[in-house]
Length: 225
Image 1 (spheres, rainbow, N blue to C red):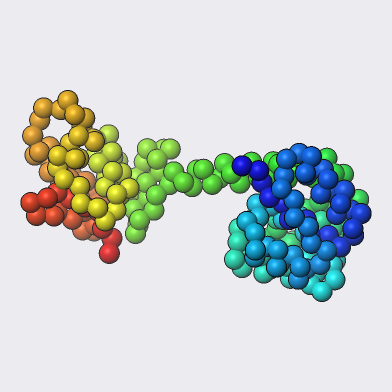
Image 2: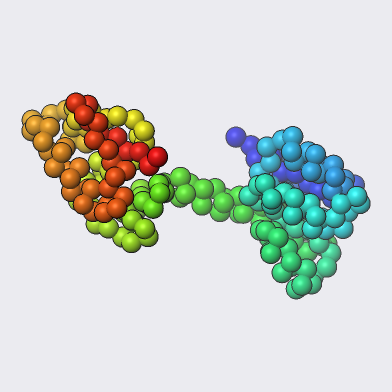
């Protein structure tokens, strides 16, 4: 799916040069000539990247950045003609991801934009593999569990069972379903292996053990409410 860039620049020629380059690369491009127009467009569309000039009519870049950051983590690159440390520090405090100093090299701007979106996408993918539930953190990439930010070692089946319960929060999972999912359909043991592993998991979770609830004559469920 193509990324959408919102170019907020009051200089029409510069805005069009940037727009053409980004369209040619495959971006969906939206344009705004002032800060108020920019906020209206931002609220009405899904935006992946904002290219934001500082000096603009109606509402300056700082104000636009503040308002966008109050409701979104979208990537923001500030375009400025002032190579000023104080300006850049203020921008970073407001949540600007990168600065590009004018006069702008369009290809450099495009390259920085692509790299920024790639970096943020990688971060998003990593976060998707981290599950946090009321003091329990499961990192699926690292195959690890933390309880109140303290690493706790789980045996492979314990880890898989805990993850299965957490990913199905609120759902009652029967012992038969747990056996089939965690141990496989060809497992010939009895249901007590599930109860034994639940007991071990609860012990390691300590005060979080109450989140794993026994449902009489049914099975178990993970519930933090």
